[in-house]
Length: 554
Image (cartoon, rainbow, N blue to C red; front, side, top):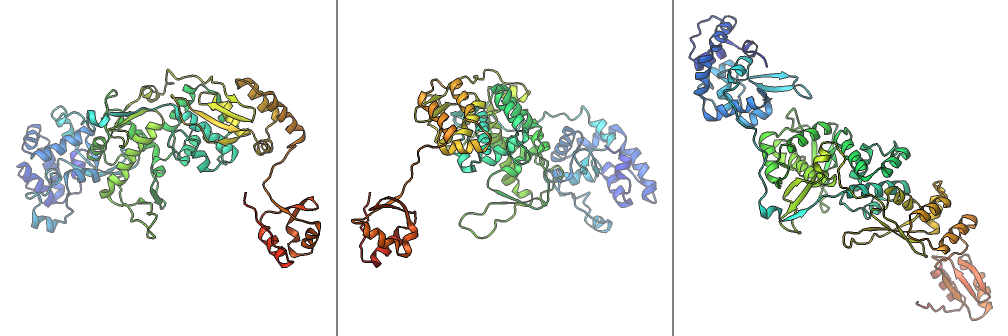
């Protein structure tokens, strides 16, 4: 920190005399240049300093304690929010109002005793203005003011954690689903309907990208995706969490649902993530912890955790418009909206990101209430230390194949196999979990095989997968696949409208009308198909030539 003479350098004589008055120092000097070294010499007396500190009001002493806990400095904006304003005054107004004798805040008490200074310093990720204690005073205060770091929040009550929501390794199954959906061109809605966790698909895609599993076009990168899917579950899980922890592109703030982000401003997701994890790391690991109290404590002690310069005005963030409103929601600018943005981000981290990734269990009062508490999961310590979690079930389940081409793929079938199956098959609705079991459902169809062939896959590949990983392979299915590969579909089904006549002459008359173009395949002299969408035109044409057509409902 700057020393006392540099802290006061540039001050006018009137200001120096106010400081001297608060210290009980007689200052007889014609100008500030002469007065400054005299004042600094007097203020450097340790005994006099201790007397000044002991005479401080309680709230001003608390402000000094806070600065000492934070290595003798705090961002100026944060310091003023906690301990009040230091009014900006010229010499004339200052001499009239005498803020040295009538301070409006603990900050002004310290300011007019020169116990704090104010200046720009490059102490963090970017230069900003700080409140600081001059060097000489830091030495005097060391050992004199000691206060334990406040605990961020409180333990949860038994009622708040009556209904535990334990974490799991389902993130591995959902990443496999997302990779397969991207490779086969599934929509976000189709992908979402097959996910086990309630992760928005864009968030999942960002996680895959952070892990290096997607290429520049947003599709699975073949080599990386294969290695990820073939690795042991514990190793894949660790890879996901490690890449997330160090990612500069996974931006949790901009992934929060319900917000609109506008403008050119930038935030630093990596620094914010590291700060949040550091704060969470101070919480007892085996204790259910109240979420709201943690967020409140961060507000009171570390509010600028993601805005290191204390800038709450340049980020253009607003809530998404309600469906019934045509007017944009107002921007959430200013520190007054801390809980709407910073508080919501902390909630998003704890109850979603860190729960999905497996770090924290959650708990609620009952199964119908939102989570109120969190606790490190049984795998959280390993993930936190960047170690592969232990006790993860291996992937060795066999899939079930029926003669109609339907496949049931258990969750613990190797992910690399399910990924390939999903590329060959039509996706069906998964079954509901029963006794902890869960199965993905697929079906082999001519259409799905056409898509697979267009993507460079071969029938021999799926035959090999089925023969190796299915409990049993119906012979008729293998025969059907071999015939399809040679000849394509040998039977075709379609839905059509049939038009039956009582005599061939009516068909000949219909051919001479404008509706003739809707006549499809002639099945017999008195039976034809009608092309889709042509039913009404044919019916009207028959009426014009004197025939009423009866529509038979099936």
